[in-house]
Length: 206
Image (tube, rainbow, N blue to C red; front, side, top):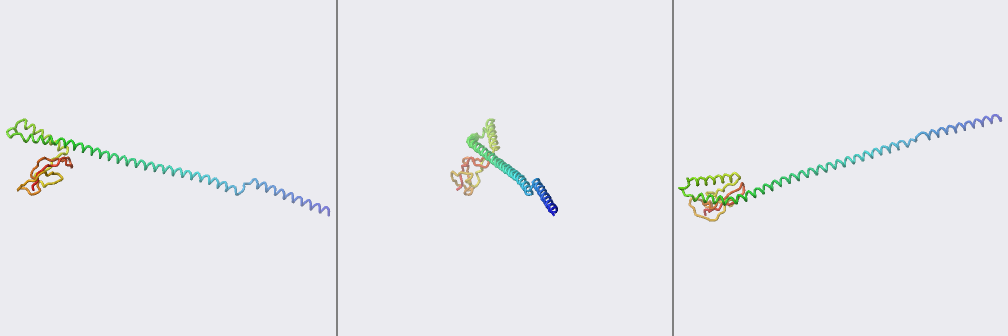
């Protein structure tokens, strides 16, 4: 019987030893094997890190696009402003030229008036002389050059009175013309292109 008890005790000891060995191996394996929960955490962290970089890159690209759009708008506005400035400058230059030309024409017209008065005083017997013909040619050349730059006389005699072109200084009786018609031109008027440089001084039928 003692021998049987000794065998049972020895068997139990072997079982305990075997169980301890299994637990040790299992514990060692658990320690050496990475935990299941760690991998997803690491992957998630890596994914988040990569996502953060992508998000920063998108923001940077968006900022660059906004900057490019802003610069393009600025260039377009500056070009529009320059075009407006160019047009305004050309208009001002044209207006200054027109004003200067009109001023010169106004100063030349009295010379033209005196030229016509001088030619009108030439006696009939002297109109064929070289001097008279020379003065007539100079007068015609002067009038032709004025016409080339846009200076033209205003028609008056026989035309209906128009306050936009005529300045009535007196009224006269005339059976041949209707009332309100210009009967006489006292001072010839001129236009420079579409602008009246000097109104015609006229006598109108009453």
